[in-house]
Amino acid sequence: MIELIQKQNILIAYLREGRSQREIAKMTGVDRKTIRKYINEYERRMEELGKLQSGEGRSEIIDAIVAEPKYHVGQRPKRKVTEEIEQRIRSFLAENEERVKKGQHKQLRKPIDIYETLAEEGADISYRTVLRIIRTMQRRTKEAYIKGVYNPGDICEFDWGEVKLFINGKLERFQLAVFATAYGNYRFAYLFTKQTTECFQEAHTRFFAHTNGVYREMVYDNMRVAVKRFVGTEKEPTQGLLQLSIYYGFTFRFCNIHSGNEKGHVERSVEVVRRKAFSARDTFETLEEANLYLQEICNKINLRTTNPDLGLTAKESFDRERQYLLTAKPEFDAARIEHPRVDKYSTIIIDQNRYSVPDRLVGEQVMVKVYSNRVICFHKTEKIAEHKRLTGSHEWHLELTHYLETLKKKPGALAGSLAMQQAEQKIKNIYEAYYTNRDKDFVALMQYLRDNGASLTEIERAIESLCRIHKSHVTTDKIKVVCAKRKERNAIIVANTQETKEIAQWAKEQLRQYSLLFETSPVRELSV
Image 1: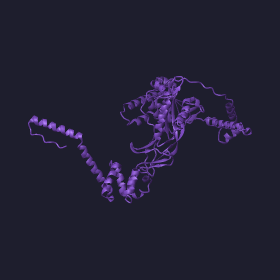
Image 2 (image 1 turned 60 degrees about the vertical axis):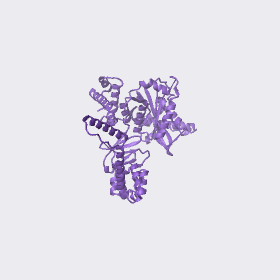
Image 3 (image 1 turned 90 degrees about the vertical axis):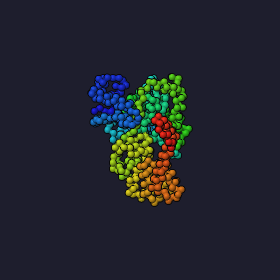
Image 4 (image 1 turned 30 degrees about the vertical axis):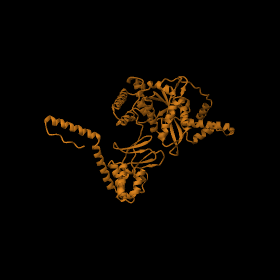
């Protein structure tokens, strides 16, 4: 079997570069049968995706398109001079420079000191190698920069930034995902709670939906969500990035370490967007409100002249390059898949936070789709729970209705349960006002609310009706009766709508015509 990156190379060469299967086989060294297999599978899946009339089943097809081939991972020999060792030596030399500025010339680390420190830290490297690296680093000249010329629709750059905002009165740290196009410096940004794979994928999904097209090449630095590890001098992309590349059809490249100039558009854009948006305002009620405000600021930034070579605003430059973008795809299902087991508290653990599922599933394994802002749980294709994703650590989110089977057997545990504390305030108000010391009856009410399609508003109205008689009449059985009578009354009202009256009038006229035709007795008036 081939690796995921080979699958990506094959599909890009075939779809983007128009190479034949024979050429791809020569280029990649992969058998033509294998190449034909993955090309045919990709085209068949994309055809299935195009035929779908709704979103149902879309995520399964997308998962199949970007699925990783199963293969055996061999052990590769490690380089002794790793990127981490070079970075460590560079930090020692930076310390020396700082000490020189402070006048501490006699407290500098010599090459032998650096070597001994590395050896103590477990680095398998010789003194002569350390000495050679230091000499190479110290004799480097200043770097020259080359101005690039970009074609419309070719390159877009991505980077993260950090921002602190007050959300609902609480100061929190958020991650700012920023895209900047190389041709016209068009900017797009979105706020997330973390720098995770699902947030990284959702950022791209939102951007490509916004542009209604896909740039041919994406540029990244050495962020964790894009670079899995360093293999010699090469960088191995993460599975999340490969899935995006396969699905949307873009290629990608990584910048060199400490070379922000290689993605200078977005490097500058993070600072500009963050300052323009949040230096004037940093307080919002919700994260959704903050993101809506951020979109407004990005629109204002894009209306300014930012490209002196073109003499156009970023918005005008982007409008010009729309026609050069790759064809848009249906939105990618940006979710991380987990398969946790339900514990004794009827919860599953995702990123050190707990979410409840129905208590009948204790001990069972479930499938969880983790999105940037929500967690959806499935058991044997059945959706069993959906929660707003928690952003902290060791937090719990429990749904009271998930514990009704257990509470039937242990009604006394209701009042002191965390599930009751986290219940909707209206539910807690009903319990405290009418069901204190009647826990079993309250559990029956919650089961009626869950299983019979009754809304909380209907139950509140029923309680109001019963309270007009006396507060003691508020019981679950009587609430059920009142709700049932209201549904019957509504059905009668629906039967007497104007549309029903018009149908009855038409039927009456038809019967009158038949009566005249066959000379029968006059038609009686229909009651409506």
